Image: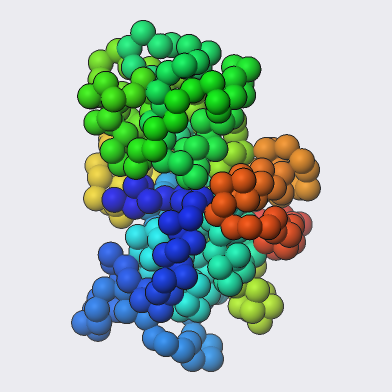
Length: 357
């Protein structure tokens, strides 16, 4: 599932983008392409004038949420035509890097990796931040991060779980040298913990939840809820498309506000879970915990994180932390000008105008 490759902040993503940006492969296509009998994920080489805005999205609650606006016809009501195409996460970035879509749903860290690879983007809104879906899960008998000293920790080195682990260790006065890092692919972390190969693992849902289920007595000793803002999820638009079709992107931003406020209203929870779970082939009951571990941001909430600051409470500060992490782990060589990857103006304008279309 896409969850297994989501939020790659590492060399693998960079290599994938550089290896074959033109492939644009996807595990599912938009309805129009499917009805026309086109191959899954088929995209035209060039976009004709006046064509819909094209957005690549994938399996993360903050992006699956776009499905609510799609199903309820809110983009049409707002007077903007948007063609959402469903991808696996890495292929969505490949399609964006190849210029086959106008925008892509990515983490703030992966926007930097993609930009360094030659396809810069601008985050025009913040969909959410991880609020517990990412976890450090320890075997029975270990109930605090401090107890990891001298122990083996399985984590995919150079990925966002690695960054989460460093923050967890720091919270307990430990450094990376105080534990034994074992490089384990994220989708293999549950079985690695269960087998006793490590004392703790770092993973995100559904792998983190699987680890907890399969090893009775295991404990989530640190989660992304302990460091809100370490992982932001955004809508990243090409600078060219943003400059040429700014008014249309402004309407997309306002539709997002409507979607986020719909989700945050308790009386809509059943309907929201039904629509979103159907997109990824789960039941509403299975999907609700994943929604709970995601802090959805309407425009008012997102604007707070779009203000410039040095800490994780600001996407600017968070992106600088990730940029430093990327350089230290040789994802790319030199720091990037991260401020250029963020544009809060459309969010600010929508709020001033009254938000929803």
